Image (cartoon, rainbow, N blue to C red):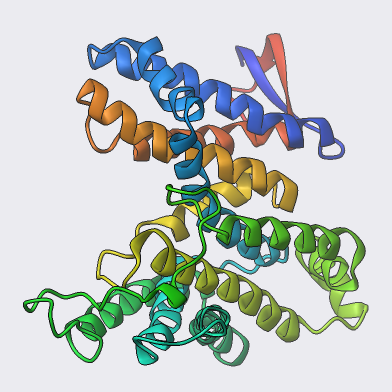
Amino acid sequence: MRDRWLQLEPRRTPSQAMLYATPFLAFALTLLAGLALFWLLGKDPMKALGLIFVTPLTSVRGIAELLVKSTPLILIATGLAFGFRAGIWNIGAEGQFTVGALTGGSVGLYFFPGGGPLLLPAMMLAGALGGMAWAAIPALLRTHFNANEILTSLMLVYVAGLLLGLMVQGPLRDPQSFNFPESRLFQNDALLPLLIPRTRAHIGFVVALVVVAIAHVVVTRHMLGFKIRVLGDAPRAAAFAGFSEQRLVWTAFAISGGLAGLAGLFEAAGPVGQLVPQLPSGYGFSAIIVAFLGRLQPLGILAAGLLLGLTYIGGETAQIAMSLPSATTSVFQGLLLFFLLATDVLVNYRVRLGRVRGAGQGVV
């Protein structure tokens, strides 16, 4: 026997209050960890946090860049949330993002230099279909061969990157690029209209807002949302109710892959303006943090996407102004995910403080 001053006691039912409070707690802990990190680096902690979380919001250009960074995060995370709710783990959204940019961008390049007003909608459709087709591979492997979709979808990310590199060095390479691996610059008809003049903010953010609104209705009021929740919470109950697991797996992968592909096309036809090998920039992986930070709820994902987008913009600002390492943004995102996972234990457990007699096996 030994004394314990801290114990985790299981709750009878998960705490709904903690379910929505822990993202705020995780963010607060991330700020505290950031203060300590900057202090250890010999930088002014308050100045660094101000540059990351405040400075980008004080100018039109900063807000515009926030919308640019947040758009793919919101789109991808909204799609991923459908699968995650059902226990379907699509970790390969980065690959679907890449293939969506490739297929949608290829349509724009095919009609170079013209295209007309229908070109951009055709590119968006091709981008979404490309992402869906790439997501169909792990869906097929899971439903027909019982392969783990985490591994298959993740490995396909690297295949997609190699495919993009092959295409921009081969059939899609700009003949005037002096052998640089890049496509032509997209013509005006293939570029997204700007949301804020003289900035890079484009109408893709408006599309993301529409997607969030539709997803909210589907999750809260549509039978598909109900089936997905039942499959994730009680698979046996879903089977007894006659819900087809295979159909839901295909549906979840189609939604997440389509939205990731659309996000990829928006990135190519928006701030980048062409196809380049560096187009995949980690949005597919960061969107996983966004999905869980937003509690797999579309409206929560919208707020979380804006927050994580702010770390991208602010991190770059802090790097330039204070000569910080280039990994500053990744460290903040990693800390946020770490503290979110750590505080999630409070949803199912409560902390008991005080002197508790234990049996020597340590804290639960």
